[in-house]
Length: 367
Image: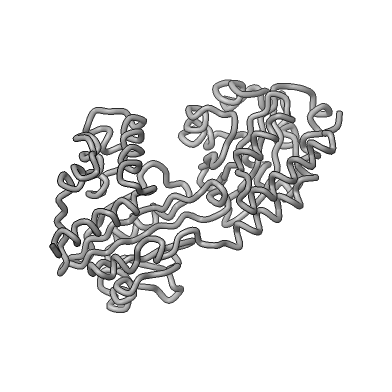
């Protein structure tokens, strides 16, 4: 069996469509799944040393399956040791990682993998700092000789996927200080820092630059990394910058009398698999205490009482999980209500919501 040339050409076109913003990784994975028998595919990362892993972009797998992998089964993945030494950009069969007779005796297979398939193929895309970034597809069945064609097709696609990886790794920051309203924050005396890979400072507004220069609550080390003056707060910053950080995306810490809100930024699926996490640090100096009338603002936008409560929770540093527990609601319900808050207020992220609140409060005070 071979993959038809027009099908292969369609996959190549989709890869370049992703690069130029005319397609998505979801579209590419969907077209790839149409080729593979019973195919379900994920772009995932794995850290063998930490025994951690997570699906970043996937097509065909259930949310429960994805969460189960991150929560437990990544740590017992029997393919991991061999996968970490596989050559880059060459498609492989799971049988090359572990003989099938050994694989079917594992907890990983019996309690997890056989829910979606019997075997798999994959290819290593990126290796960085001990972490692996791979594409992997489950396959409903078939002998290795039958499935070799799909692994070989990945190898054929490798040059095009490599160009996509290099494009996104080369990096264009999706958000700038101006896009996040840096001048607006300057006007109300609030500092904003954008922090990227490894804690590197990407950009800062004028107030943020001044606060960095003063070096009280936040400063740069000799390598240009952002550091917080208190150990626990600095550890919180490191956790939010970790690729493995999931769930909570916002924390509020007090450092040297200043209130720092750390917000892990959402990235589009086009780059999140290849790019390192980044976050915004919003610094409210002690001389600029902020007291916000959230119920009044919520009323202006027609928010329900439950939506106002979510807005207050986020602005005080609570996570979606925290709010769900406090209100005795599911995380899915809170997510749905948060989407409604975004829609009614016209924002697309928690950082934009925070900017809206600051702007509205400043306007109210000036009046």
